[in-house]
Amino acid sequence: MTSTSKILALITALILPLPTWAEAPEIIGVQAQNRSGGWTFSVTLRHPDTGWDHYADGWEVLDPDGNRLGFRELAHPHVNEQPFTRSLSGVAIPGDLDNVLIRARDNIDGWADDTFSLKLNN
Image (cartoon, rainbow, N blue to C red; front, side):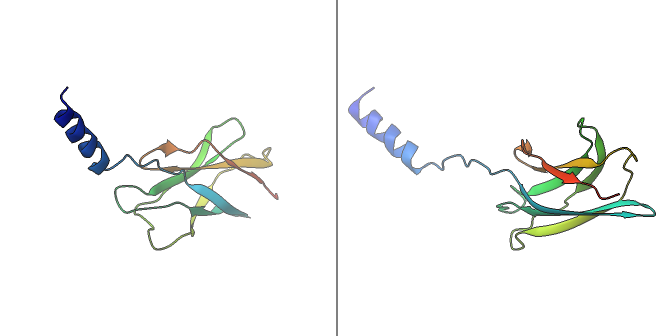
């Protein structure tokens, strides 16, 4: 490689956009209420949504073994609404459970590694 080629390669590398490392959605609060039609969960998330190209797109309620009990799809970005809260009603929770996990995802990285543990008040 000539010195001119090396300089051009370096300049190209410097001006090309670098890949962004997405942050996982952060669950900052959960409220749950047991109602006659099932449980209602209100989950507050924070995520650096940038628009349709990268946004928090859902969260789920899991039993302690990781089985899905409910799923809330987030149908659009929340760029100017951070943090934000969305609810899901009618979630059937087995009577013997006193704890559930909440996990969030975004449309780039998928499911976050961290879960939010919530003790249920039956």
